[in-house]
Each structure stands twice: as C-alpha cells, then as structure tokens.
Length: 316
Image 1 (cartoon, one colour):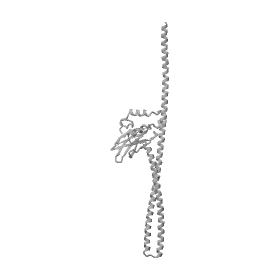
Image 2: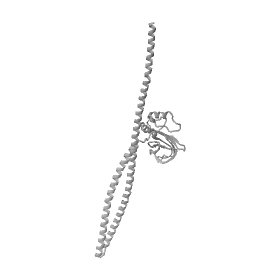
Image 3: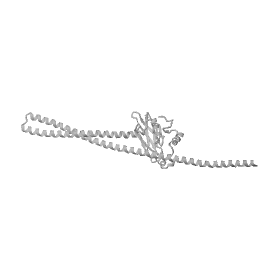
Image 4: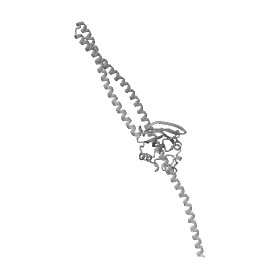
C-alpha cells in the first residue's frame, strides 16, 4: 500500500513540474519578441537619420553649384566689358600714333620753309595735341594693366571654387563597376546597372525605363529616351560621366543616370535612386534593412531588366 502511494506522489510531482515548465515558455517568447521589436525600431531610426544627413548634404552642394554659376555669369559680363575697354584703348592708341605722325609731318613742313609765325602756331597746336593724346594713352594703358590683373585674380579664384565643388560632386559618380560597388556599400542609395543597345524598345533600370537612340564614340556622347511616370523625355548630346537628374514627386531625392562606357551602338551605365520613397520615410514601420531589400531583389530578378550593381551576373 505504501508503495502504491509513493508511485502516485511521483506521478503527481512529474505532472506539476511539466505544467510549471510549460507556463515559462510563453513568457520567454514574449520577452524575445519585445527585444526584436526594440532593435528594429532603433535600426529604423538610425537609417532615417542617415537619410536626412545625406539629403542636407546634397541640398548644400546644389546651392554651392548655383552660387558658382552665378559668379561665373557675373565674371563673363565683366570680361565682356573689359574687352570693350581694351578695344577702346587700342583705338585711342591708334589715334595717338596717327596724331604723332601728323605732328612729325607738320614739323618737317615747318623746317622746309614756312614762316616763323606759321611755324610757331602750327608747332604749338601740334605739340599740345600730341601731349594730350600721349597722356590719355598712358592713363588708359595703366587702367588696362590693372584690369588684366583683376581678371587674372578673378579667374583663379573662380576656378579654385569650381574645382573644389566638382571634387565634392565627383565623389558620388562611379566611373566603373568597382567604384559603383563601393558607392553601394555606403548604403545611401540603390544602384541599378544597365547595358543598352541602339533600339526603339525600352529597358527597365530601377524606377525608370531607358532606350538608346544614338552613340557617338568619336566625341563620347549619346542620345537617350527616358520613360518616367508614363512621360517620355529625350536627352541629346549627353557626355560620358555626365549625370542626368530626374525628379519625381514620390521620391525625396532625384534619380541619377550616369553612363560610364560608350561603344558602337552600345552604352553601359547605372541608375542611382533613393532607397525609400516619401511615403516610406513618413512611416517608420515600413522601413526595412538595406540587406533585406538587396536580398529580395537578387532572389527574384526580372528578365530583360537591368540588375543592381551588387548582382554578380552584371558585367561592367
């Protein structure tokens, strides 16, 4: 009888311990889900901060370029005015030389036999005119030298500013596949490489469609048709490495198109687009990690379309 009671107590103890262990697992799962949700929120906030910083930098660069263009236009206007002054100075110099020759001729005429009174009147008038013209030429020559020095200094300062701005902008342009991969590793934008042959059909490259119409290998230029939001845009005589910017109402930043290789009836380049749309930036819950977005894009490529720069199947 005692043995039977002992066995019953053991069975009841085992059942109570099993129930206690089963009640612990839901709590552990809830804590794990809370930790994962917290990490996701922190990651989304970090990504949004980086995107805002990039947007501010691009806006600052665009403002600098606009200011430099205004300075260049102002300098061009000044140069035109200075050229006009130089022409006026050259004309004045020619008049002075002519007056000098005339004065010399008059002096020779005086020496050949004119009367003393006539020699005095003619010599005095010619000498006064010559001295006035000489003083005018000297003043204009001095002003011309100062103007040339000012032009040289203005050109030097403007060229330095342009070089500095161009260096900042060229840091975001990839000239080959390796540089494109380096840009994508920064995690700022999504990149889609494309290879286009001359044809009327459009090929997808990220958020837009492209069609090559002409490739000039001699001058390294090309003509292209773009299909953006059901609108056709034509770009003519675009140079190699020259970026094309296309703005969209749904994107916080414009889409960039760069061609880094031009051959006969063929071009190669890439499309750079913002990773998130305005709607995604305004809703934190829709933000996804960059690695997840890249893996989904590489797992399901669309036939006949350009692939992201990190996809191994794309050739530079």
